[in-house]
Image (cartoon, rainbow, N blue to C red; front, side, top):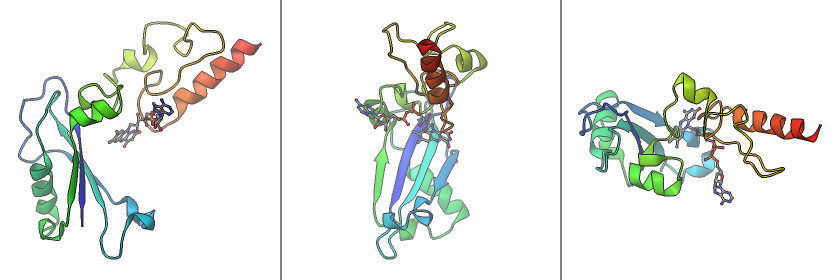
Length: 158
Ligand SMILES: Cc1cc2nc3c(=O)[nH]c(=O)nc-3n(C[C@H](O)[C@H](O)[C@H](O)COP(=O)(O)OP(=O)(O)OC[C@H]3O[C@@H](n4cnc5c(N)ncnc54)[C@H](O)[C@@H]3O)c2cc1C
């Protein structure tokens, strides 16, 4: 059973070390998509909250935390793949320092991102609009940034 570990920053005030018992989110996507498995070999995906700017490897702490709730888990691991916060930020420039929610998701940022404006989806170029987690209402798999950007585009046609 391979472990796929992803790391995300815990916040600006977090200490520089991963806690011995970190917050761990675990998922077994192969339950919905069996093509991810090979026989009895199944991917097990996790991520942990780590301090902002953390560059270390939290895999051991993650495995220990899962082991607490599922004794014997460690012995069933066949391979691991770790993606650090630095790698996350290289893959996606919006994930500065590995921050998977593209910056502070405070009330102000839910409305005013990427800048303070009444037209957050406008780019300044005619007919070109911006959506994504970098625009209101911010990060999350809700699709509303695209919806509101499309509304802005439609309004520009009338
Ligand atoms: C590990 C992790 C866990 C998360 N957990 C949750 C959760 O539990 N609940 C939740 O609501 N949100 C969660 N999020 C946040 C959520 O996934 C993101 O906020 C959301 O997907 C952002 O949507 P987006 O459209 O801005 O970008 P993305 O979903 O990243 O989409 C951008 C797309 O553009 C493509 N692309 C990039 N550059 C180019 C290019 N030059 N040409 C063509 N295509 C390009 C990329 O391949 C990608 O498909 C999580 C994020 C991560 C990383």
